[in-house]
Length: 313
Ligand code: UDP
Ligand code: MG
Image (spheres, rainbow, N blue to C red):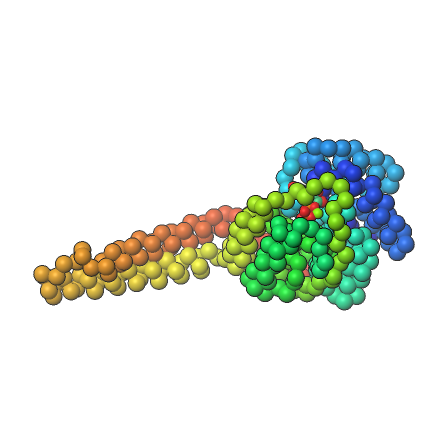
């Protein structure tokens, strides 16, 4: 199969027939074999009925429905598990992303050798204050923390090589950082393409202000998990030991001066408190690292490594 098109949706019943017809038209023009995977994220409107009706007319339209609303990342995770096309496209269901971009995205993956191509909504039809300005800030921070030169990390329209979606695990609200996840898994050829963005035609945006707080925390954990999840001791152990050592040396010095000059008072010197605190802090950091190591040892993914190719096996 040439293409799997994964579309997470939450209460988007009005948009689905139009979106499906548009995708079908583009695929027909290009003569591509494809599947559309709709992930109904626990919609409370008629979305699922619409998907069932669309499947009856065209069995390339597939889908599953979550029992409740789990979020966009969960939807993408399940869709990535199910995808079988050589190239996987993700897009939003609200008609803000244009299916006309799909052939060019696919071409960039197949001919230019990209692992992932992200859409860039250069001209954006969303609210300036609540969406455009905060998202500029987020993209700048993500760019500098991840070292990936993308303008628009959170664009719903993206194309992937099949191995990429099988090799990454999107969880929590990590759909914003899929390029970062891909890079950590060793897929370095990440590109972008300016895509047409349209105003929302039906329904309303499902993401509010809280996405900025959650998004920032996710960015912190992603940069941390990527580097240290398999070896927490290398972070906590190092800083814990250094902290402990600094406190210990200071305490030793204070005790020594007490022996040399018994009239010397320990408790009214700042160094005394600093040394105590850093000994305790150092111990705690070290313990956090040690517990982290034990957890990492028990994790069933501890020895899961991605193989790029095999020979003779
Ligand atoms: N979505 C989802 N689950 C959610 C929230 C959103 O599957 O809990 C889908 C939504 O239906 C849409 C896409 O994710 O297809 C992007 O959401 P939205 O258009 O509301 O975000 P915005 O474009 O405003 O950032
Ligand atoms: Mg949208």
